[in-house]
Figure 1 (spheres, rainbow, N blue to C red):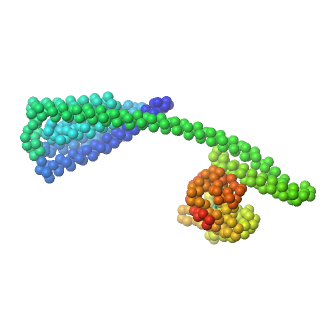
Figure 2: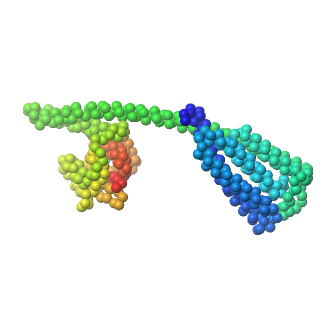
Figure 3: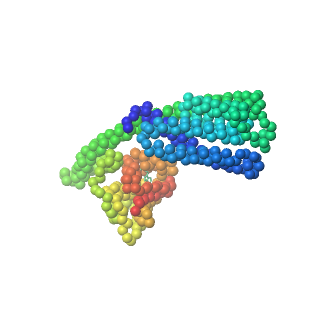
Length: 457
Ligand code: ADP
């Protein structure tokens, strides 16, 4: 059903009131238990001569009424939304109205105007203020006042017999007109003052609730607009990086050809410049590739392949093969611990390659000469684990949570390795999450880092 923001806001606030009606019903179960326990204790333990039977009958009636309320509450949940909202106010009014009657009967059977139960009217005024509008609350309070006045007068003129609780009130005072007037005065003013205070507070709360609903809508709109912008930005980045990748690869291989002498002899100086250019082009290609990997997930472009069962040991071997030169150049001691059996994971092979390349590449990049890297692959009952540990520069504890942010690079990493995009771990985390896995980093500055990736079997 389409409705404007104002109606939506009204509905949301009303919906909260409906929850409160349910709370009110729950409160009534407690009240019934309270009435039964208190009257039984008073009668049997304190030996107070209460008229037990009528009090227990009233409690049973409240109990039955509450069953009707809870059934109706469930029933109105099943009807159409607009009817549901309309029923709510009537339903709350009816419940408070019925409770007044039960309460006045209890007051009558526990000593009339002398009964301490009369204080409980104040609780109901507060509940009425929470559930109803200010006007409805005042109307309900007036109805309660009318009931109290009627009961007192009817008992005073002996139309209704006064129930005396001798143990509590040995001397009859219900027929003392001055006592009656003063008690009624304080009782009535207390009820109206309570109604005023409670409705004022309830109205303030409702006003705040409305403001929160409006604020929530504004934030949701702003968030959606941001999401749209982010998607447009990602799509633009995807197009640009896609277009850049081919010419950059071509430039890199042309530079390599010149460096290897396919275009004839070149001077040492020119060769050095070509090598530097090729390195920079290599970095640009990495950046373009990382950006492509990052935005491919964001704009939901389908990957080229479907998931299939991949042996992690084989994938690790493949990745290490591509990195053997870098590992050798730094004289890094490499250890791969794995099981005899293949450790198979259902994943898009390209995704696994991207994850392993980034993790192992980072370990190599951030480990000094003569360091060590250990790769552990194993499976438990419900998980497949890949652990890449190194004895490198480590990560400061303040940086550990930031390294998954786009473009974030810790200062110690920048100091040892100029070339880095700060995108690798963001991509890894996105891919791992997409396959239902988890990534965890344990690191100590200057000692080394262990990155653990786990996938559900
Ligand atoms: P890049 O390596 O291109 O900077 P990444 O997203 O792969 O980007 O990593 C982000 C940051 O996390 C790195 O800049 C570095 O500070 C830190 N980092 C990642 N792996 C390691 C590691 N094995 N050892 C130390 N620092 C690491």
